[in-house]
Image (cartoon, rainbow, N blue to C red; front, side):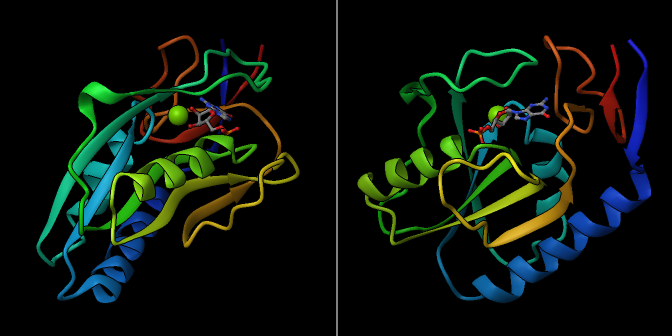
Length: 171
Ligand code: 5GP
Ligand code: MG
């Protein structure tokens, strides 16, 4: 399927590095753990942490809501097997995209219950006009229109993650 470029590679690179430097400033001297939501935020994580030049740990969490391109909401399943120990850590939760807000809100609660000292959120993308669960991300890369996007980690049916840009999938 054809993909129209929405955010070019250089813009992603520049903005993610900028967020990384902001995170480094905000978390200097704190026990930071960056928890990335698999699988979509992997590339953003790899780029972000190379600009976070203060000591920090990495954690991964797998959450899936079992839905395809339609993005109709359904139940969120959190994979406990990968859950990092966040007790007494200042957690920055990183996701690829804030759509309805359900995933991020549920994971924030989950990490708080697991004993995190604080939980803040970072999203690469925020889709406008789709949010149903009130949550304000503390760091946001780009706001985008209501379209299904792929690339830079984001998939459609487990493909397109490798694209170096974020694009709109046209069918
Ligand atoms: P939310 O819980 O905020 O509705 O959904 C967030 C999750 O839905 C993201 O982590 C992502 O996996 C998926 N998602 C939402 N919109 C898109 C999109 O436009 N493209 C892709 N590839 N995934 C999306
Ligand atoms: Mg996701």
